[in-house]
Image (cartoon, rainbow, N blue to C red; front, side, top):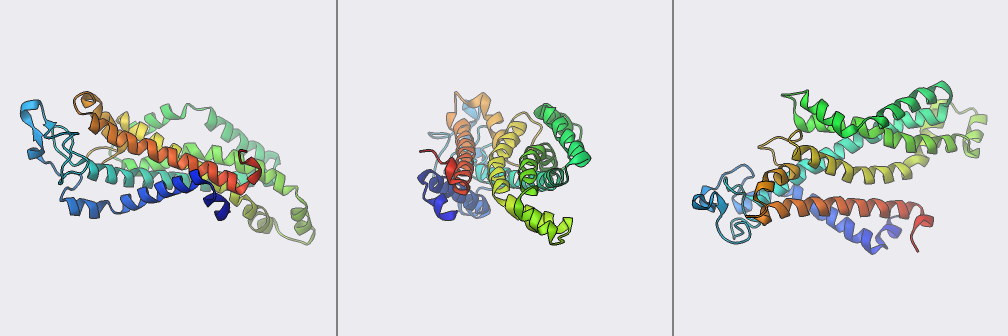
Length: 291
C-alpha cells in the first residue's frame, strides 16, 4: 500500500506538505525562540500609530525579526501565531477524528454484525444525527457552555457530530463481512461473537476506516476554522487560523498580507489532506484509480 501511495506524485507531494506542516507546528516554540516573538507578545514598535496601527514596512511588516510580518494595531508576530494556530487546528482535528472514528467504528460494527433491532436502533440514531443542521447545533452547543475549555469542547462536539458518517460506512462493510465465508467458517468452528467481531471482521475494516479517518481530518480543520471565524471556536489569546482571518477582514484592503497568510495556510492544509485521503483510497483499492 505504501509503495502504491508514494508512486502517485500528487500523494507524495501532499504527504510532504502534511509532514512539513506537522514539523512546523511541533517546532513552533523553537521558531518563536529563534525570532524572539512569542505568539501573544505585543510589538508596538512594529506598527505605526499615525497610520491607524498599520505595520511598518512592506508586505505587512515583513523583516528579519518578523518573517511573515505582524498584526495591525498590536504588532503580534504573524509567523508565531500561524504556527501555534497550526498546533491548535491539527490537535483538535486529530482528536475529534479519533473520537468520531472510535465511536463510528464501534457502533457501526455492532449494527452491521448483529443486525435486527440492534441495527435498527443504531441506524435510526445515525439518521437522526445526520438530519440535524450540524453547524447550527455546534454553534448553539458551544455558545451554551461558557467557561469551558473551547479546544476540548470542539473536540467533543466535532467528534459527536462526525461519528454517524463513519458509522454508516463501517456498518455497510460489516454487513458484507458478517456474511462472508471466512466468518461462517469461524462460526462453525465454535468462535464466539467477540472473537468473530474482533479477530475476523474488525481487521478487515482497517482500510475503509483509514480512508474515512484521513478524509475526516480536513473537514474538522475547516469546521474548526469556520467556528473560530464566527467567534464561537477557539478564543483569544489562543491563536487560530479562523480567528486570524476574522480579525484580518477589516484590514484586507490596507494590509492584504495579514488576510492572505492564514488563509493560504488553511487552504493548503485542507487541500493536502484531501489529496492524501484520495490517494490512500486509491492505494487501498487500485481499481478506483483514475486512468
